[in-house]
Length: 433
Ligand SMILES: O=C(O)C1=C[C@@H](OP(=O)(O)O)[C@@H](O)[C@H](O)C1
Ligand SMILES: C=C(OP(=O)(O)O)C(=O)O
Image 1 (cartoon, helix red, strand yellow):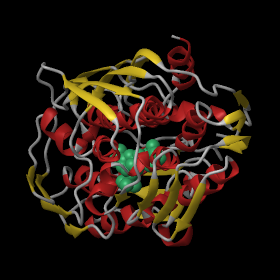
Image 2: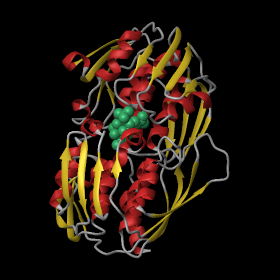
Image 3: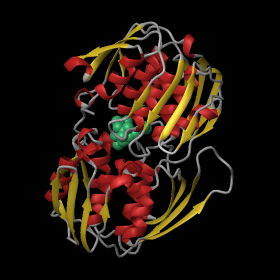
Image 4: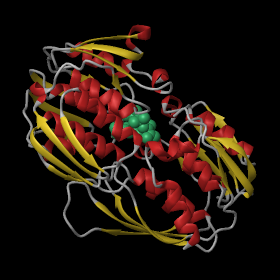
């Protein structure tokens, strides 16, 4: 995100009312396209997220010779099986998307051709050897700057063998890359997670007719497997809903309904945090059966208290920590976030960008090695801040404008396009309802 789009936000004291449909889950949208591409037959995807990251996934798989028709949130993928993917003649540009970069590596690892993957300046700083190392052990030939740590990465895939791998970091992207390679490998692939992470890849394998066994933190499959097209209904993204869950809790005289939010238990850490902080929150699960659970959430103005967040909960809310930090500035007492060093290797170093930008608004927040400590409750004020091209930082700062006294001038506001193109429309519609 290079554009320097600036937005003046002056929503001080606005009450939020009404309801919004939460756009499709980013993690599930990526996977639906990828699995559709490597399965045989026509996959339809409904409520796909047409955010920049998922559009990067579509563009990459189109370059691999897969016909993909996309119109808004409706997508059709004409899959040809793993073997039907073709050597790309151009670079595979993953934009700002870590998920596209790492999961696609797992697919390319098993395919007998050459390709080069690169993304934007942020992607070029994110660690890739966490995926390159196990994929190389399985038989792929992958190289990049700093012995394969950074993009651009050149891949020559080939004959793969199954692997038993203990993840050194809790990462659904690394787990997923290994499973995608394992589906093409000879024999058993087993991934052991230090802490359970989002399980959308495991769910997707089953949805596309494959088999995978999950036993606690151990995920196992036999390769090779061939997959068959599926019809996928993507639930709303709880990571996007999180911004409005926080907004509804901290804005005065507010009560809003967030419709169709994904409620996969590996993603619902934010709901537990809100409950522990004392928020007025009600969950209404959808009655209809679905491969990924979903429901509506009602959130109202709340008196919050500080809490401690760490351990197994962290992977279940990793992308929500920037907005949790804002919540904590409005909670009575101290909030401690720990065991979250992974935040340093996201789109930005989110420990630093959260602490720096919230400090500019008057928050009392101290970055630590693996998280942050926030003292509440502080009155925030307007200031010039920036997203640094990180969508989640941009949305957190925009939500802060509901409570900050004065104007927030947000640079790089267009970063929200990465995961939530309708974000500002939704914010203004709830503030004016
Ligand atoms: O698998 C996924 O879809 C994701 C996994 C997480 O990353 P890590 O695997 O790096 O923890 C998360 O932060 C990212 O937004 C999406
Ligand atoms: C970390 C994120 O995504 P990715 O790793 O796919 O860039 C995110 O969406 O917050």
